[in-house]
Length: 313
Image (cartoon, rainbow, N blue to C red; front, top):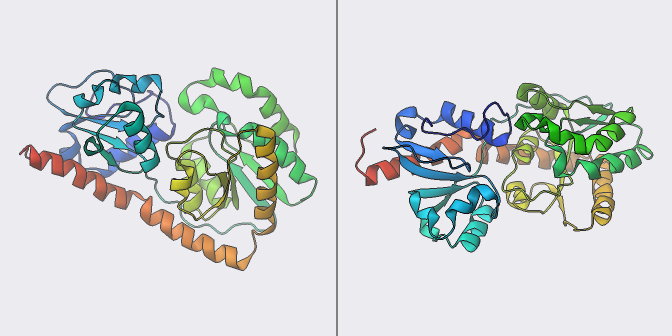
């Protein structure tokens, strides 16, 4: 343990990337006084102020140590969305004064001139979050549109859990069978960011209850039309800028609704009013999800604790 724990060593998931970005943006002279635990508690570092940085859902085994007053071992608990915090407050009985919400952050994706001869759709998160719905829906949309291409960056390899990809092999095979699909599997973040910048639409029929969503933040930052349900904290992350629809429990019903939403997005990619809205969406995302703002929030939060404890930094 070195002040800020790594969740899964060698992994390159959203939380791991966030930790590395935190270290590069926040003054080490400040955070070195803290032991920040990002969801995976493995003991406290002596002489450090313990902070719990929650990324998981309530009920996750890694959060069970918060039960029965276990949250009191921490100075504060930091949550990545208001939706997540309120779930934890209700489930574990955590007092509100122990909590603070500091949303996730991204390095904004610079604008890039897009090739409008084709409409590029992208999915750049793990398979279990809705890829099984996207694959057949895209196949069906290819019967209607001849100018669409889908780029899929999706594999559990980013978490070092490549074995879990096997249960989605049928979905991967369906994607690879479509000549309009580029299945990339796992790719480095720089490659994914470039692909997001080149895309027009983020297609995300999420069936996973997100506590926050960096993939959505990135897509919003790149000026994409983002098509997704109002599930978990997605509605909070979207902040009313996206093409959000009502989540449906039945996967067939969800897929049908998603089909119509994605079809409408494809038809409106070149709509001038939509383009203007996407410029405003992009500005909002870069300001409110960029590290410049998050750096200020984290620094103020940590300094306040140090000041209360009269610790020099």
